[in-house]
Every structure is written in C-alpha cells, then in structure tokens.
Length: 253
Length: 296
Ligand SMILES: Nc1ncnc2c1ncn2[C@@H]1O[C@H](COP(=O)(O)OP(=O)(O)OP(=O)(O)O)[C@@H](O)[C@H]1O
Ligand SMILES: [Mg+2]
Image (cartoon, rainbow over all chains, first blue to last red):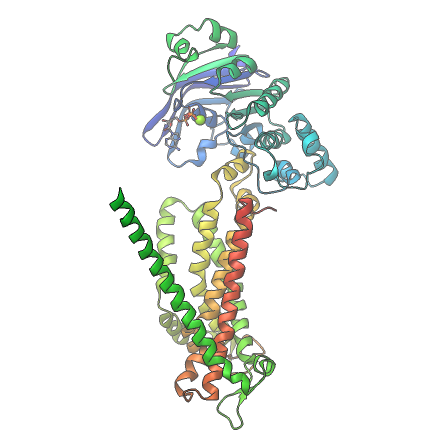
C-alpha cells in the first residue's frame, strides 16, 4: 500500500532554527484522493504542507530530517531540482494572492516561465485551466483586466487555475476557503471534489464540516505530531484517539 | 477626564503650531525667491531668459540667457541617472532579494555611509582622483567636465535610489514572492517578473527623487563640472549647471542689481524643476497606492 503512495513522509521532523515544529511524521497520500489536515492553530499544519513542496527552503535556518518522497523519490536529495518539485507539487495559499498582472498573464505566468511562447497554445491552456477552476464563465470577458478587481472567491479560483495551469500532480491547499464567504466556499469545495479525479489533493482546513464533506482521508495533527490518520468517516465517527475526538467535537482547539 | 482632554488639546495645538511654522517658513522662502527673481523680467523677456544662448551677466551690455545653464543641469542629471539608476536599483535588488543576511549587514550600512559623505568630499574626490584619471584615459585637456560631474552626482544619487528601491521591494507582499516560487519560478524569474513589476511605482519614485537630488546638488557640480557657461557638445566638455552658477556668482553680483535678480530667477527655474520632480513622484505613488500594487 505505502509503496503505491503518490506522496509520502517517513519519520519526518522539521525545525525552525532550534525549535522543533514537526516531530517524526510518517504519512502516505494516495493518488487521486483528497486528504484533509486538521488540528488546532499552531500545531504545524502549514509547516507540514510547506515541507511537501520545499517552500520552507526559503525560510532561513530551517531544517528537515527524515524523508519526503514523491513517487518514491526523495524530494530533498541533493540532485533534485527544487523548481521541478514545485511544478509537480502545486500550492494554493490561504489568502488569494493574484499577481499584479492581468488575469490572462497571471494564469499564463507558470507556463511562460517554462518557456511556452506560442500564443494560441498559451491561450488554450489558460482557458482550460480557468475552466477546470470553474471560473472561466466569470472572467472570460475580462482576461485583460487585473485579477485584483475580482471578488475574493473569484481571485482564489484564479489562483487555483494558475496552479493547475502548470499541470501539477499534487495540489497543496492551505485553508483555501478561510478568507471566503459561504457561497464562495461552496464553489471551492465543489471544485475540489471535481479535481480529485486528476490530482492528489492535500488540504488544510479548520472547518470540520468541510473536512467531512470533501476529503477521503483525514489526518489529525497536534503539537507537531501526527495523532491519527484514516478514512474521513472513520475519523469523524469512530476516532481511535481521545484527543481527536475532543478536537472534532469542539471540546478544545 | 477633563484634565486629559485639555492636555490632549494642548498637545494637538503644539503639533499644529510646529507644522504650520514649517509651512510658513517654506512659503516665506518661496515668496522671497520670486520677489528677488522676477524683477529681471523687466530687462529680458521670459523667453529670452530661458532660451537665450548667452550668459554674460557682467558684460556690457550683459546677456542673461540661462539656456546653457539649463542644458548643463539637464545633461548632467540625465547622465548621472544613466549611471545611478541601474546601480541603485540593482544594489537594492541584491540587498533585499539575493544577499545573505551577513552580506546585507555589510552592504546596507556601506550604502548608507555613501549618503552621509559630505558633498564637498565627493567633489574633492572628483577633482583630485577622477579628473586626472579621465584626463589620462581619454586624452582630453581637462577632466573637469560633464562626465566627471555625472559620475559624482551618481555617487550621491545611488544611496537615495537604492534605499527607496529597497523599501519598495520590501513592501511587495511576501505572498506574491511565494506564489511565484510555488509555481516553480526560479529566484531570478521571481525578481524580474514579479517583484520588480510589483514594486514599479516605488522604484519610479526612487529614480525621480534620486534625480531631484542630483539636479539640485551644488557643491559637486561647482567643483567638477568645469564651469563653462556654454552648451556642452560632448560629455567631455565643461558645463555650468544652474546651482553652480548661482553659488559661484552670487557673492560678486551687486545687491539687487540685474545680475543678482537673474541669479534668483535661475533659482526659481531650479525650484520649479525640483518641484515638478517631486510632484511627479507623489503622483506615481498616489496612483498606484489606490490599486494596492502596480497593475501591469
Ligand atoms: N517562520 C517561522 N519561524 C519560526 N517559527 C515558525 C514559523 N512559522 C511557524 N512557526 C511556528 O511553527 C509552529 C507551527 O506553525 P504553523 O503555521 O505550521 O501552524 P498551523 O497549524 O498552520 O496554524 P494555523 O492553523 O494557525 O495556520 C508554530 O508554533 C509557529 O509558531
Ligand atoms: Mg496555517
């Protein structure tokens, strides 16, 4: 089972300088599944997510121990190109962060830096990505306007389109709907469900109902440790740890 | 409760007075500048003053055409920009985006130190070191010329440009940099395609304020520009930018004579130019602030 995992960590620990933020985490993510990461604030969910595409590399003084594997290969090996990893493992951030560019150029950004110049091909890929992110109809007439003029939910879907445009294999989402209203949130959730056929999705959320609605698997993190991971309905109905149950039922955190 | 409001009113009034005082002083200076400058236009037309090609204020009859001085200022300022803008902006990019923290600790104070050098010292350096070097390299009669002045002015503008540019880059939201890196962009792609465009308004402000610093600078151009009140035909010609002219001649100009008024009028022109620079800088900053960041 674990050999077929799309992405996997083995005994992974993470340090910000001297302080240990993640401890000995071993978890496997199967291809074409949605996994929710839940846990109280500060437990290390974002930190964990960012170890999966090496975003923590840009923070000085950080260190990873143990292994992080993508298709069975360690992504922290010396001969691995971090740029390649980040292309294969896309990321959507908590706050929508469109570039100060037009919507078209925003979504085309990742394609262009990969050397795609052909205008029609660019256009096709941008269109396909915006459609996949369920935002095409809302922006097709304003591709040459700034994404900053869109609503927060629309901006977030443009950001998802931008991440999809480079055809990642894994999609990391750090509370992608936490800055959005319920209707926009619902759209993002529908989108995640639609994307699960093609992508391995790992999503951080503070919203238990959301985790229950969208994910196949759920992992509970607490103080930098993985407390338990399993099928979402199991975690929500019969968690094996007391802590998980307390957290899910809202007794703490 | 009552005592605290009284105290607050007193503090507010105090600040108001201080703020007003500086405005009043500024206004007085401007009024004075115009009052002393405008009388020259009884002798020459505005057009002849600005576009006249001859500046012989002490000849008989005198010529009050400051066109060569304006050209001198503009040429020296533009050339200094050509030198200072790439260096200033690139050093800011280096310090804020590329340098490790130790390198940063050395570089930042070094650039700031450059700003704290008195202009007379920079002028001196230009006279004693740069001038003979230029003379030798290019085999020209004098090293006190447009090029020398531009290099020295660039030295003075670089810290301004660099530190404002660095603030501008620093002000770009961290999220944008992360978004770019997360898409698999390299550090250089992130700098050139996201950071610099997003900081463009701040970078333009930096450049304009750097120029405005250069155009008003007096001591350096007085010392190294060569002083000839003629339109320079090459960068190896001497020139006489406006501030140099004012500083050099004011002492010998008879009080409230025509020459005196002409120098003040030159000051008015200089003031208008720096004012324009600053207004443009403000406009750019305000325009882009509304959108949050520059829109490409
Ligand atoms: N850049 C950093 N430098 C040092 N410590 C950090 C840094 N970022 C996070 N931490 C610490 O690491 C721990 C985990 O933080 P993290 O952001 O991963 O938590 P989180 O589970 O995502 O929380 P939240 O739900 O509030 O987003 C916290 O104790 C936090 O203070
Ligand atoms: Mg977080």
